[in-house]
Amino acid sequence: MTDQIADAQDALRLAFLDGMSRAAASVSVVTTDGAAGRGGATVSAMTSISADGPQPTMLTCLNATSSTLPLVLENGCFCINVLRTGQTEISDIFSSRLAAPGGDKFNAVETETLVTGAPRLTAALVSFDCRLISAEKIGTHHICIGAVAAVITAKTGDPLLYGMRRYLRTEDH
Image (cartoon, rainbow, N blue to C red; front, side, top):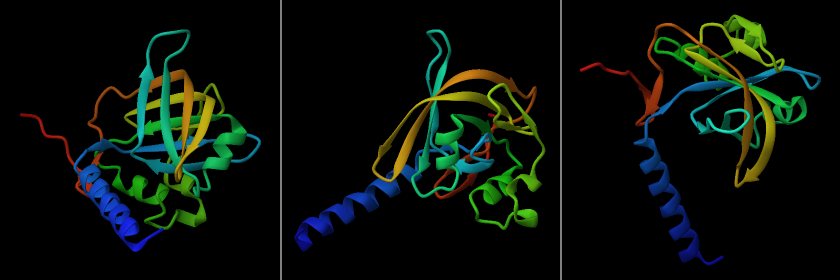
């Protein structure tokens, strides 16, 4: 690859990262448990696919280097736990920005096991329990698609948002 092409690709990547920093996203912790073990990772890349069909479907993206990814792939399940304002510490622990208490991220949260066997963070704003139906590696991440088996929603709270390379707060007008 020539230096000129590499420089153009670097410039495009930086422009992309800068542009994406302006797209606010809810902060979630993706968890899994099963024969491969328990794990969890903070993500901002998750969304619904469809509410139609036999079961609603969702996707999340996990970095290929994440220790949680092989667990999700082998366990065949994951739970997307949407965090609420005031849960930045949980986000930071599951993203490894902060050290996990006692070396285990799950020491920082209370959980319960859902239909698929994936742990739900009981303090989450909403939790989507999913059976893995597809996973494909695109670039540095795997897109994991799940069929939703259960949804648990808190009665109150606002989503924790991330944008502009920092946590944001929702504001009612």
